[in-house]
Length: 109
Image (cartoon, rainbow, N blue to C red; front, side, top):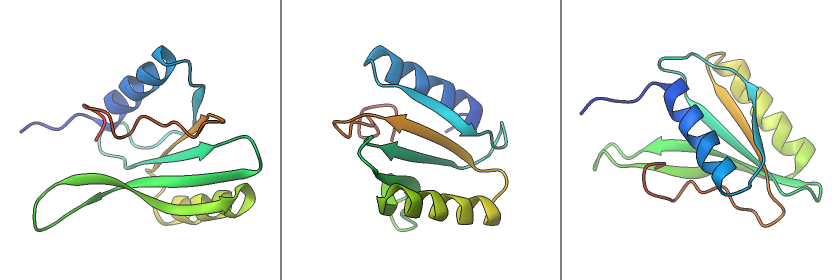
């Protein structure tokens, strides 16, 4: 099965968020073709979480898992560490007081 480029996926994700009136923006532009994507969910109360996609080697399934959660400054530090390891990493910040990120919806897993 053909894989979408990172840039295509990011634009589709941002469009899906816009359709649901959830503000989001790219804070780090990664590699257009094969960069990994990290989502920062900012609940606008000083708390945040960072989500990244993991692959299950046994089943081949992809799922979004929590990389860090807690105080926004701590989550930002975790994201900065990840960017230090992977300069091709995309970072998208989603701002939603309800904690919505839509990553469990069809087409976004």
